[in-house]
Length: 236
Image 1 (cartoon, rainbow, N blue to C red):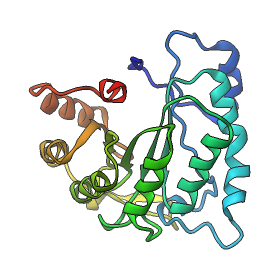
Image 2 (cartoon, rainbow, N blue to C red):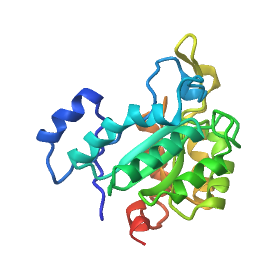
Image 3 (cartoon, helix red, strand yellow):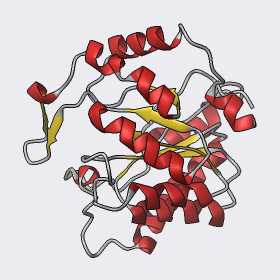
Image 4 (cartoon, helix red, strand yellow):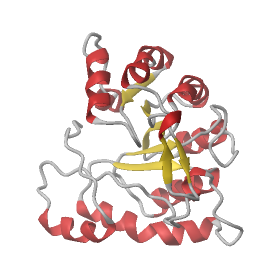
């Protein structure tokens, strides 16, 4: 299967409209499926004791059903902060009988574990054992941590690895703003790309605080080299 280059990011209320409006030839929904607590908890993985595996499954089930009904080509479960939510997504995909390829993308603040402190090895293993998951990766994580995380992921899965870090800036959850002085330039960002590729990454991009210039720079680095695309690897 070839996946369209256009990937529309839609809000929850827009999803139901897309069911009837989207063209069947190019639709690809890209949805951040996580608990929307508006308190920065996606950067800590701390949802509180009241949030259980079943709570997360109940919260996300309807959204997943809508996306599947809309005919999405690929569903991205991203900014996953802990093992519990990864398990919830994996079980939902199985329970709902979803036959749409998905990827699981985690976040880290130390280059060893996901932001909750759960092992990246354990989280990636959950993704590896879910038949619907076609790729595993890291997003919204400082570039300096990515190389080691790729190596860790590759220890537990042979699925393609997707990488789209943030700019390296720190997010202040209390003030709800980014600390600009902590980021890296586009030049520094793309200087990592070759090493990420050598470590085993297949798809590259940028998350929070990266810009179109960042993506152009990444494209410039990769255009000088050739390797199978992500969709090619999914077909292998």
